[in-house]
Image (cartoon, rainbow, N blue to C red; front, side, top):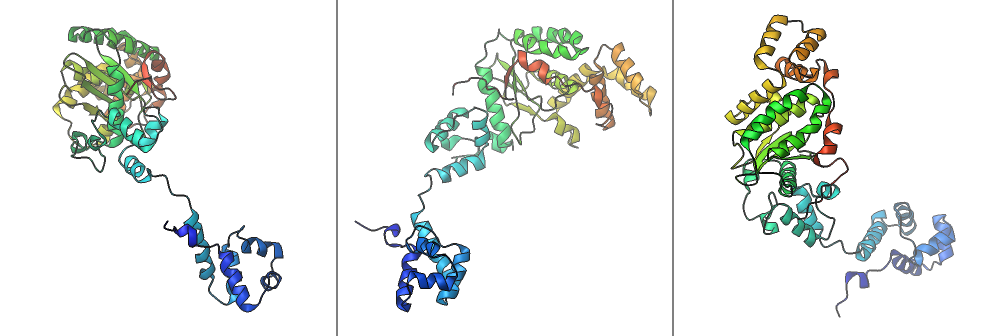
Length: 375
């Protein structure tokens, strides 16, 4: 049988004893020279204690060698007896480097398991036949369309979670006419924050699968529109900006995408907060969705007239009067005015939080709860 390194590499105490014999020293002599308790020297010589950095320097002076001599003896001994690392470390490194695996486990999307089972769960999560087809994995056979579209891994993982949950929801057959009528049904709900509570039910009645999934770290996303099949539209939102204006703007924005059949071929992922800060010209799909959502939150023509008439002083009392006149919560008007003025500190106290209102009546994943979905 071939000996391993651990079989022949000895504790530094063995070599220290050999050096002592060469000099005719006994244990008590070495303790005297080191100025250390004899018990401490005995622990090293018997292999019960390692050589610390301080002791390596002391032994170096005692035997007239460099401290590195004893430090290296101890390091070699420790490495020889160190336990072999977990065999899946390189694979876990590749997985975590490519995808937010740890966060997915934390959120309950996949279970903590050995490497092989983790790879199997990830393949199922991303709808891949094998780990080689998982987006972003360094050993993937080919680039996925998510990589080609430069969609960050965290956004892709979030998107697939929305898709999984949406596929498990049962709703009536989608009706575009019913969804158009739902926009009018939304209007009375714009006056009070509690109105958001009815949104999931109304959309479900139209055959739209509405899912709220908390965003992953690094996934700067507000909403998504896609279709499971020709008759099954899905709207997913994050509510990452927990304000009444953002909630209604995102919902109406995604509803417009659905009504126009956007997202049938490829998911439309919306980072609307980022879009405000971006100088890029939005696509035609985004332009029409933005216009519909903006007019929904505050009538565009009326708001234009109001801001021209009141410029440069937009007093709070005037904004509140405008909101009451047009049957809107003040936060909806303030949100549109902030965007137009590029002043996101304007009257922020009216941007009421609504996430706590909408979550209880929604199919929501995150914030401490996980929607049970089988991979």
